[in-house]
Length: 481
Image (cartoon, rainbow, N blue to C red; front, side, top):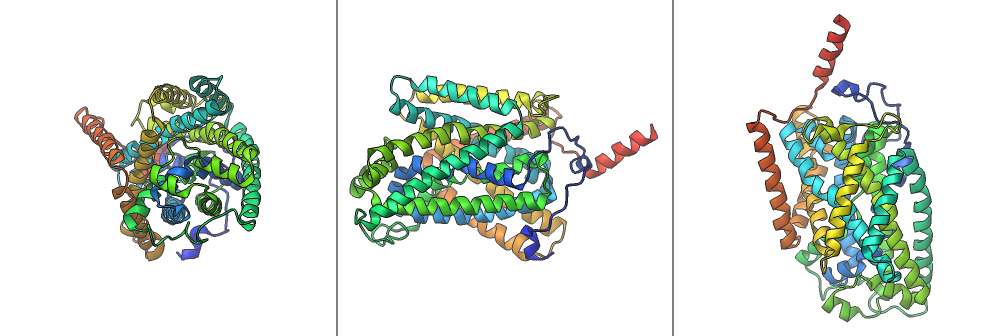
């Protein structure tokens, strides 16, 4: 198998028994094409995601915000390649849970799924909270809790009406976000030409006065929040018309496009930051650094436009696809009995995991409302989301090596050993340099998962996954009957 074949243009329609050969029934509706998957990934990552956390990354990186995003893109690129490999082998919903479970073993899959639950279950709450806080600052007469309830209800309704409804909404939101981004870049570059910017043009990428690897990797652990979402494409494997190869390619393309947008916009914003020294010394507790920069470049109207765009993008577009992806993870684990099987129920006409969708909505609402009562509920949520995802991605890289190199005896050293190893090492540095609070809470969550797994063994309910052999035996039994 050649390296180029990993993301080649060659396509073939998915086999009609694509998941049946693993012992499952095709219940979700296959209606998404390559463009739908690509748009889904871009919307999940949010092309204007750095707007909301620009100040935090700027402070954490010593002003080298573009470098933090560049390293984050490289780290996620290797992770995307590993996702692409596993999507080809196991074109099913469940993401890392499915890939680790089938690539290594069911118990490991459960722990990987448990780890990434920290990302997927919390990320909708984080998005709703960020967006509601932003909207409340723009329209103070409407409290945060009211905005939060509105966002949750709206997205739940859209997701309930099916994945096609979600896909159509995604297209509209992507165009709107790109228009706002284009406006900022045109005005921002114009401001730089007029001499409004300050400092070395290369300082957003490298500043000898502040550079250190621990500093940059610590900042990267925050910046990667913007990249989380390309992996959500893998959750739609059972609703895609594409084969595993093109499914994986859509993840790689979405990540690359988003990364270029992130680096470009943060580079321009970093050069225009009006009070660089204060931001480096005090941080951005109000979360308004980017909007202040936009106002400095083009006037108050541009600051308001970027703030409103961020609120809508995070609270509606991003949280819409996050809720969809999370429900598919719960669906996959419920279908296998590793979470309550009621989560594996599919609506007979909408053909969506309805119970999982409602559970995600309930958790997002309850957690979002609780965290909104805290002085700074956004920070602990964001650090936990990142930490859970990074740990799950580490297991993903190991899964590629175990499945392909050890089990399948592949000799594609780049795709099945070198690339996963590089991705693994980069992520280790990111995890090690993450905030201490995130490490403690993240490992505590993982410890709870280990306890749950041990309890399952003690109760005689050890994790198992249907195999291709099981499917063949079931089919043979049916023929005999």
